Image (cartoon, rainbow, N blue to C red; front, side, top):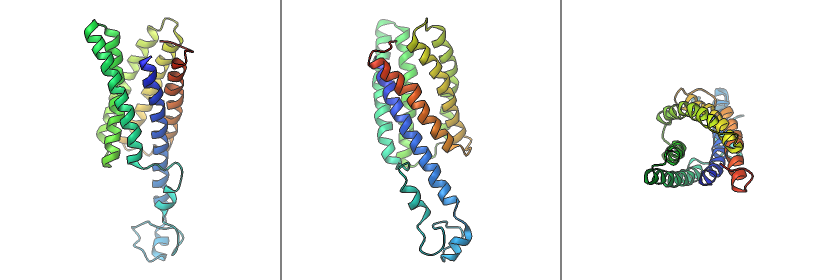
Length: 221
């Protein structure tokens, strides 16, 4: 049940971060779309792409920021901090249960949850300070690699449990998504927009839907 609570909020945080990625990509594209001759016509330096269409045109960043998809970094950091905090608290509960009762399953659940809880806390830190994300990108590769054997293990031990089968498949989806985060942040590939859409879809399909279904009693782990 506690795992379902984590999944519910992970779904929300992934969806919001996906929207944030798309908005940031759109804003960057607006700035890059400004031709140098338009800036010159407006009497601006050619290397400062602040307007389109000559004198009196609206600055490109302002147009991008009016989009409902554009979210401020520090605003998105709020849900990342909250979800990371929820994940850490629940992970600690599992870890204590595992240590006190010598329960490997509880300890395993706590360790797996911390993989993602730390992700959201690190993202929040980077968003709040406007820091670079290259080091975080390499951490995402670690999560992506870890997710593959975790998915295999979960499916091998599902024993026909629908929720566990769904969770096992989710591990492979998360491996792909965190691999995209690695490619976006560490390798700096221009894939922010598609990564944002995939993040939204996975947030709903892998986390929110499963967590909600378990919490209302449709499935159980």
